[in-house]
Length: 172
Image 1 (tube, rainbow, N blue to C red):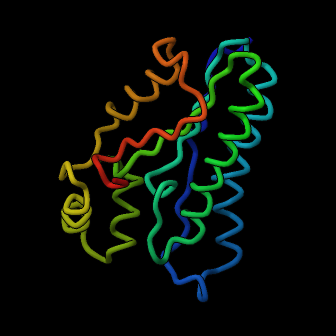
Image 2: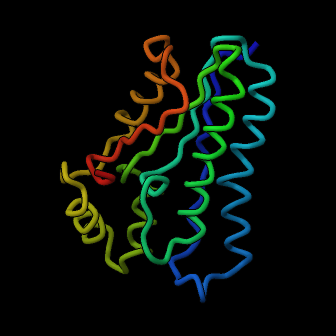
């Protein structure tokens, strides 16, 4: 039996206005960012013990949106709907399902997004994003891991259907 499942794969896509957005890129982003967590939920929840926990990693963009990121924003909002459905379906078995919404994290994936989105070098792009974060810094990977561990643990045993922002105040 499975105790915990964590859906944590994702891709960004491109930065482009909706009228210019490539439909094939849109489909690819949704296939990874939405269908991937759906398939994990489908199979993991069927094998999960009562009282288990499923965490779906979304993004601060799953709580907000910005111009030029139609596929990414759509996908990160979509997994919130998936989480809410799964949370209600699994509640009778005591299985908790929640989404985590990290803001910018100090990692290669985020730095690539920032350079692509701003057209700046990595240091300039990081500084630009830091200025948008009320706490004025990126999260560390360890801070994200700590939030995942909390959601996976019995410390969160009465928390289900929740959208947990881990964004330094960006979604406020």
